[in-house]
Image 1 (spheres, rainbow, N blue to C red):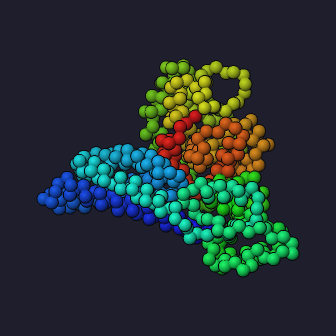
Image 2 (cartoon, helix red, strand yellow):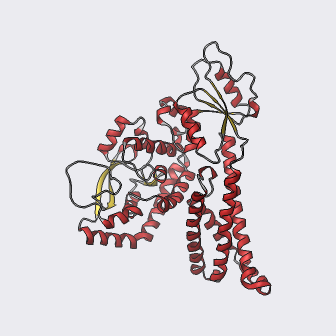
Length: 450
């Protein structure tokens, strides 16, 4: 998958570069429109005297576009998907620029100039992505050969069909070789293939030797589960066994990677900053809970942390003080137990802000699998394969599964959630940490809380 991954990175870099050029070009055009030829040189020189503002605007553009998933064409389902997220970008970009202008005195540029800049740049970015979607319907050169059958094959095909710009296309599907059968790759020009996906091979099959040789001669060979994981961001737990987790080698390096030691520092700095910034919101929310439904304001519940160690998790209470004796149950959509102000707190995840204290105490991280109750986790460990593997990292206030699945009630939902969690554990590192934090903001806007 390395060639395809490099192409995807190039695509994201190209989009980010185009956005930056559009933003800078819009700023120049806005200066011309606002001040005309007479004052254009003066205004442009004033802008160029503050490179910090230019860098700030470009970085804000990049961070917010990443937050709203505008750099991954493979995830753009429809033009409406792109339009909605660009609208969110427009609002947040305006706020970011206004904050920068009013917080840093030398950057005091006119509101008219900023308004015209955004009025030019944002529609241009929508047009750029609309054109990209149109071009995505053309045949792609990234060709894949699939060998073998099984449920994973159907899942792969469905994912590829549902994407307007998939990272690869299956151009040939070959049956799995049987004992005594000829090599299925015989007579096929594999040099013109970017990827060979293996869904099924028998132990001792001579084709394995040829596939290994191809892998060392520039043709990437991956198993179907790995291809599915790269495509969806999920590890298909029913298509792998324990040997697969050992063979990948990615899971054994979690505790020894440099990020394992840096993550705690990131958590302490980020959680402390967030706690200070959100303290007024937290105090106001606590007073609202006490006013509308009485005390206590903080809800405490035992959860399982790293390596299955229990700890006490803090949340703002959003459900009524009326135990029903049914034992632990999952919150449901429009759950009657949630009082009105509680719905608002859950919608914007304000009820989870007290968990920043759990982060400071080292029981949680900002990013990781959501911690579960011991009795519920015990039930899932019996029903869902590899469920206990999620304990290998600290649980998180947000996570890869949370930005994809905002609501889980059934066991099947939790199986899918685990697939996302295991993918995040496999790719545990600074990139996953940063991407999850950024896209959590986008998930708050486009995905309602429970």
